Image 1 (cartoon, rainbow, N blue to C red):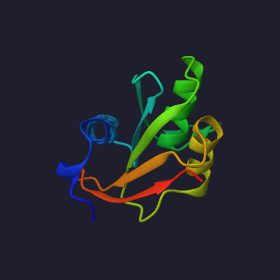
Image 2: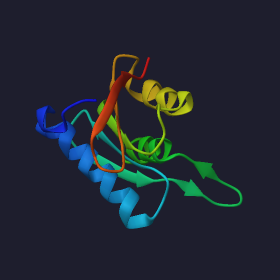
Image 3: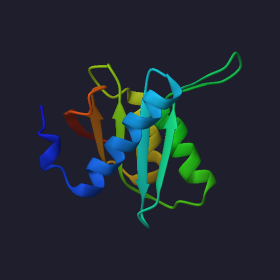
Length: 117
């Protein structure tokens, strides 16, 4: 477990935004990404009959649609024990394999940080 208070303030911000998206929308996951300019994009899980996207895939798609060229970091708030491979791939496609992806529980405590690679 990672002490969330020891996180960089910008990383703590994206965890807080991801947690808020999850709670506000009543979805299984919330996510937030920070692009190369410091802008953040926040999303929740999308579950429609014809479209299913994880929160992180949705946040990455929002960043791309808004013109982001890269990502500095990503955060997911979920009850899952690991970041899904498809989520890491979405981050990797935009940001590269070394980009950190933080996984926090619903309480906002970061349990692990992995790379997109």
